[in-house]
Length: 165
Image: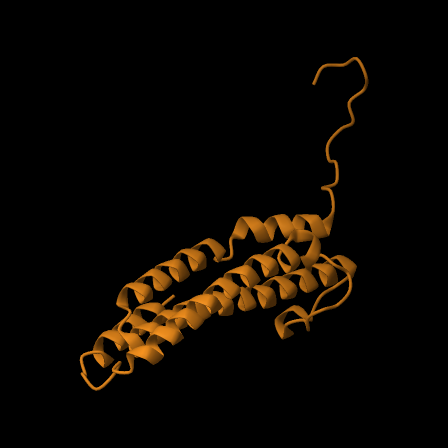
């Protein structure tokens, strides 16, 4: 998230120099291309989320990502599945963050090549919103790990039929 304000700062300081952003016909063409890339990235973002970031995809038993070194010390099959799910989750979230970051970079490029500051602010705001929405939550990870572990064992005394409590 910190890179987005840096992009805005760079664009404002670079644009203070009048020798930049003079090729307006190139800038208009590039603007169309970059907005097309934004739409493609948003489509890919939606596809990636639906395909690879669902609990079912993260719990897939076929190994798709390498386990993180910190998670390789598992004991037992449940911990192995949990380590694989967490590794999948983190790796796939990095891809999502890269897609979102690209949208902010397109805004920076638009500001630099054509002084399209409104476009940069709009794409930066979109990136910030998506990053905030995609920020990993403890609730999601806990739910994922509960699915790995299976149903919680029943504890306590069994009730006899017909007795209260």
